[in-house]
View 1 (cartoon, rainbow, N blue to C red):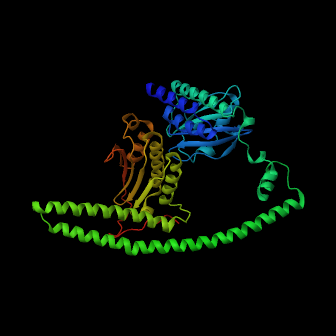
View 2: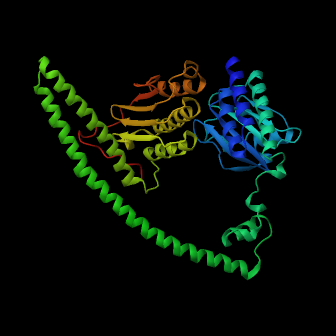
View 3: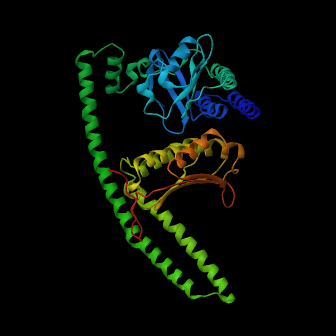
Length: 436
């Protein structure tokens, strides 16, 4: 409770300093998780007769950016009834729209309305296991909700009528032709004769012309990227490998004479430098070859998660791949995506880091390392629910999850599982190819 009180006090201070809705939601999504120890948290705004999931912080994606009818949403129930909701098992509560929850990790939840007697928002906390939030947990969340309500009033969001307008609330003349027609249809006004038909036709013709030009430019850019990637792989990378082999061979001829130790140290330093350069170039080659594509494979999803995390971190994580990632079992791959998201979220919320590296390797074992240069591991955090869940994800495959201090400071989180299904690749550099 002492830690919870400290987190709550810090969150209140941050909310008092917030000057925009974006700043408020940034505080809410992380504070709710920290205070409750949940595996995910959402910040939900009431948008007339809908619930708008404006932000989230979770071990895997929930519903950020989506809207649901307020009468078909548990967050909506909490706002309509101005009551805190605790559900220990979502499968047995009639208020839960199971179709929206079953694709997620959520097994239990707690929802707290923001603003009384007419809530304008809600805070949701979600667990990957069956968990009935305690009275202490809900009391802390309700206290957070009070602070959030005060912050929202200060930035001018004190009622549903003052929330940011939705497309159906804009003056239609400020929209593009296609959007104007769609807005009228959604708002029940309908098409307005030939003018709207002309707007739609003109919009489509303009879009088709623009798409054609963009497609040609994209093809040319893709060809350039592929050519550069081939040159890097076939020349620079191979020369680096050859240099490394020569140095390794020379190292073996030095023996153990004391006079040779200084030379051996210099060779080892050069080998380490070459190894780093090879890994960096692999990342460059991968980005050039596949950065233009819609990446649906594991590598692409990890890159997307890292890119999304950059908004919270304030900088872009470095991501490197080694080995045949496309051979990793789908179930293991799903867990890897959740682990990457959770670890990067932890770095953003707690590490105070200026850089972070994600390394994913496939071979006899699948190993994921996330290394940051922040303040180092916190024993309380290491024992928390979020990291315990990552440990569980590894142990069910017979693997391990460890958090330790990184060399030179910061934190090293290593998630490792055996992968007997993987076939060893050739000794040379193996190109990482996402699923098509």
